[in-house]
Image (cartoon, rainbow, N blue to C red):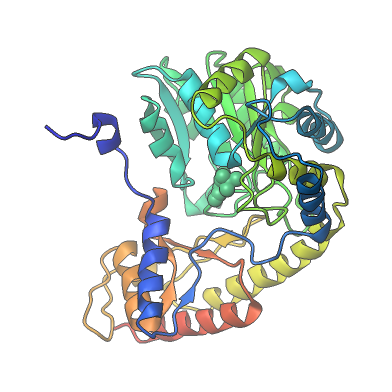
Length: 400
Ligand SMILES: Cc1ncc(COP(=O)(O)O)c(C=O)c1O
């Protein structure tokens, strides 16, 4: 009998981390690998946010705080929810955790019983199904398609819901596709949820601010006020404010759920880092001006990547509304052979051959639950992106 828990045996290690490790190994061996697998902005944390953290240290704000956040940060979240979405929350309805990941995890741990189902549209962020499994629930994957630019339709959502469904996990703009739902597209989904009062929505708005071409971000409770009482709106400062290492995420929802999440956190990690919380207060309350200039850069990179990949025979690359990912299909390359003699029979084989034979690291689509595709993170310099896409073009042209 294994010493390790049965639950853990159902969970996979993160494939994005595995791909990044493989790329690092080749780099260490002297290869000029371009890594497009990591999901974090290449920008530095803005200076006003760093200054707020330094000031917090100087002022001795370095002790335990309330387990799920300092009152100032909870208030900043309430102000943000009102300012950006017109939604009213009180600090008792807000939970702050160690990254967006912990708030999602706390919510699943606090609510799932054996047999409870969680609907997850695919392609999905790699952690959702495994977090559901760790919390004892059953992920129910609802596959989308390239035809709808990877957005879940009302019919697909309806078909995935059963009497055992507890949550829908919703993510727009999405990791890994960058797809962002318009207000009308989201309303079609919230209309389905209004017909199923036992289903709650956990919306992961992490990429809210990263949106291009005038895309108007909307969150479910804003589009359908009737869902307010069964929506947990999750967000964080990691991506928009280039604060991945600071580890601050937050969620707003019904008081009873927030209290249950606090209980999970108080018996596991206690409060998120006090200094990071003060930095997050500044992120939410301070200037938001750099968001627009960062977005200009991300949009330029997105266009560069979509344009270069679209020139490749056998690859189809939709233009996403947001985040910093593209998710091209390689359906037209399946069955071809690489110069080293590997037959491309899956997106995993494609990504491995691309790394080994062309020195570009991407993440294969099977990791995100929809194949045959791969994910590129374009949160890196224009030069690196241009060189990487040239290598991908050359590699694809060399297939026979
Ligand atoms: C969709 C999505 N949600 C949540 C997270 C987690 O963010 P954090 O680093 O704040 O835990 C990520 C990070 O990659 C993500 O892509």
